[in-house]
Amino acid sequence: MAEAQVVVGKKILKINQSYTEVERESKAIIYSSLSFIISFIVMYLILTYSSLKLKTVSEFGPVAALCVAIVAITIFLIGFRHSPLAKNEKIQQLSLLTRSITTFAFGCAYSGIAFLMTISTYVVSADYLHLSTIKPHLMALLLGLALALTTYIVFIHATRASINQLASILTIFTISGAFASMFTAQNSSWWQHHFSALGAGDSWSSYAFNITMVISGLIAASFAPYITREYIVLKYHYKSARFIQSLFIVIGICLIIVGLFPYDTYLVIHNIAANLMSITFGVLMISLPWTMPRLPKLFIVFSYSIIIVIVLAYFVAYNRAVNLLELELIACSAVFVWLVLFARFMNAVTHDNRKMVQ
Image 1 (tube, rainbow, N blue to C red):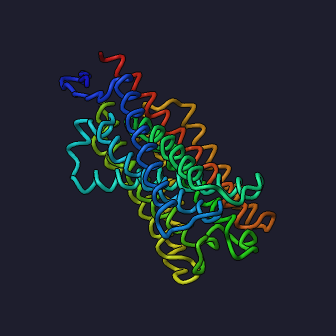
Image 2 (cartoon, rainbow, N blue to C red):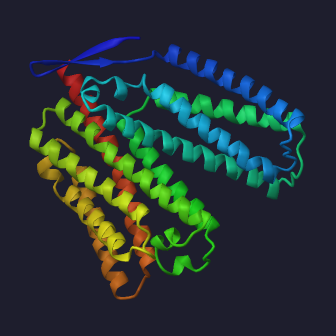
Image 3 (spheres, one colour):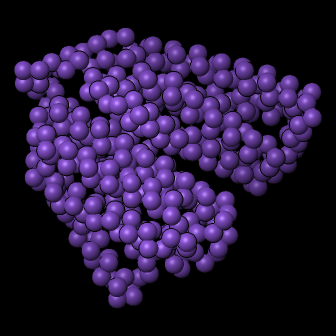
């Protein structure tokens, strides 16, 4: 493992670069091979000699998806410890609780994505490829391949964890969870109302939606210490760093409340959290010229353009030209695009600043 030093002002920041590329690829292959061998042997023995009989794709799919989800979060927790973010000197100064919650939430996002992709694959295999029954050795082989691929991808991502990745995973996980809830919703008329209708009731789809909101909230709040760390590198004022950190924490808490308090049983609390989240995002984008003056003017203009689009969409919805769901689709799409670009621009500015001071 290597260690680099970045000079910022009169301070020297030590950045542990964790694995080299060769080390990363080598360990990913080792973990993938172990996942394949162990899962193949264990699953084959279970299917052949135990009382558990999984003969059809529909029976095997959920079991395989659960195994993939467990392996995904386990491998992420193993790999993330060696990522640049986890090794960063400033991040290590955070409390153990803060770092644990951040890592767990990030791991849950990978686990959720892996689960949804696996279950979708088996659904497609059963419905469109007309696969009904699978022999034990083939089931074990398919599970082994799924776990090996999951292990490889998650380990590589975990050891390269960055703010860009955090934003992208937040977006992918939230969209994946929302779509999973949409496609399995028992109330076929939910789209005539709003997104929150997906979290109402007592069904698998409502649980999927609400859990997605809670984990997304944890990830959004996790932006806070990392954004603060980037501010320190860029020599921004401490108060600006704390302000941005507070806004992301508020956004994350609001998402968690939206998931924990469905609108059909806790309407007032749910609406307060949703509206506060919207207002906080607006404050975050409007304040960029003062809190983050080093960001390009193009991104500032883009941020203000998103605010204008959302406001116009609100007035159109107010005049009944579109329903509330369409307004939420416009707002959510704009916000997630902004979030990913914000992280990428932040990383780009930090990278350029580091090159200048070296």
